[in-house]
Amino acid sequence: MATKTGVYPVFENKFKIDKKGRNSPGEMVTIAEMESFGVSIDGNTVEWSPMEAEGWLRRMVTGKALTITLTGKRHIGDPGNDYIADSAWGTGGSCDSRFAWEFPSGAKLEMDCVLNVTNPGGGESRDSAPLEVEIMSDGKPTFTPAPRV
Image 1 (spheres, one colour):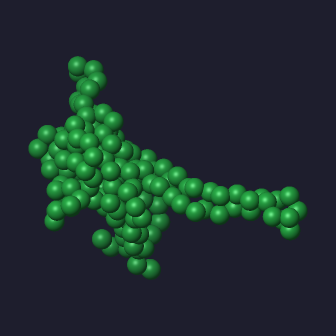
Image 2: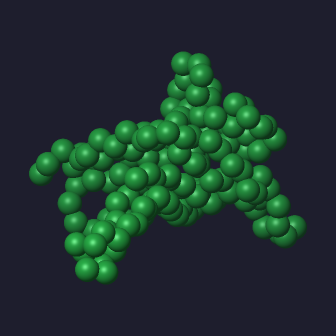
């Protein structure tokens, strides 16, 4: 992916999932029909009040967790979409996978993850079926910055 600068449309983000899960040599595939995403970084922050701070708190982030929520449409026949939808019915290791987020800047985030499908299809009779999933980090992600311009 070429390095970009400036403002960009959200659709230039690319999300990939390992369609074989985490514990076998797999293949990273794009997840089709995703319409929106949200990112939540949960930082574990420790606070303390040393005397020399004269009443002001000191703080340190000592841990983090990342959740990426993807919302879109169920697309039967797309390998990435099928893999995520099928994980709705599993527990334990059957919900473990690998995930990659390719940023428009050329940066990349890769991580082991746990899939929590929150909606494998439903809605009004005249609507198209949704697919909604929380992709939750399992351990420390690897972030590769974009090449400098």
